[in-house]
Length: 292
Length: 323
Image (tube, rainbow over all chains, first blue to last red):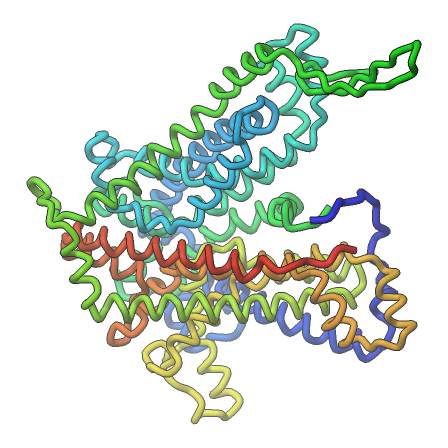
């Protein structure tokens, strides 16, 4: 790689590209069509979630004649979605919190504490990250039993937390690298202990990194299905939303309305988080992908 | 001048009489670094320990298990590489491996192509407009694959599915089919569901690359008389090669793990034609209790993924353009 010269580039001006009307029209129409294919299925599910089975078959397209909120209540209470949601919330919150705390410390150490071969440690972790989870589920399952953690939420929390570590530590290290060492030295000279420096000086500076890591962890853990289904095969008490949802489909003939309502219940938190924090999401994705 | 406590720094010594200057690199006392390092290891320990305990150790156990015939009860008996011999002759293994590769390849190919094209077209929109559309197109990436699978079940189910209804409304009855149980259509449907979910990711990555390209380059190309498409194919694509490669890597390695959406859409059917490798592993382990054999399958899977990582690294190591 050649040497990089830091330069601030002017933002892309629309006029640079959009010169001819035909290209603009072409671009706009394609984009709108793609956006419709994204939005319509979601809209469709929302509409279905307010219909009963009869209306689902007779009026599959339209606005429901009557907004049946009871579908949500039915799914939540009768079909146990409330219970699944509680499990999902407990597992996700604890796993995300634990992962953020450990990887913030770890990323800080890798970035600023003269750990030998820090880059290599990171590279090994990132390679491990690509190994599909299914490769370890069998031995992990028996390991959990021998650790007496099966049938508890810990069976999900601890592995979820662990699997988020490579990516999170990577993001944190990237951010810590951008903080000038002088700042730490100043705190150290003033007699601040390392932990104190970390929590009082460093953490407030990397709030965006924390948000990025939290958003990513949340999205991965909230929707994780495979390990959740294996782990909860021995105990129905720890079923999370994705597991419960597939069971929902199998157990009774499909009641489409409540089923769609259950889908909405699982998608809604993701959408809210995404709308509020998408900046951080994009930041996380493109860190390392963008030159300079 | 401020000198960091622990970083090496340069001092220029000058001999007054002769005027000779010597540059000396001064290293901080090793003990300072060592004391930081010890604290650093303490900071790093929780993360590494958790990862070793819940990822590296089970992975090593998978290798151990793959050499046994353990069936869940009693002691595991070491049977050497017998599991691997069975695996070589296991038709379902090869079929599922083929499916996994099929889904990984095609979903990656289409995601990257569509993502790249949409990122390019996004340049022609007004800034706020482009921002909104990027958000919309990216939003499926955050939806869990299970949900995507279920969503597409609504669309492709035979009787009440959205697609068949649209086709009937357009009087194209001959095109309607049982998408999920027709052998010809079921695999493309799974690819579509995957592409729908992940092309936004490629879009965002590629767009980030496009944004970094200086305007002057485009301007000068225009002065030389290059058209829109030529600018795209000759300037933009070569310049964002790293981002394209990254998207290909993400989608390819993600595609190898594809499982949730297949479970939700087809469950491996019809006639076991869409069984993917993770599905066959889970079935062997948790339905037939052949833990030893399933572990051997896992090892094979890991090897396939590692081969892919090496292959992709090798493919993408070519030079990149600097600008």
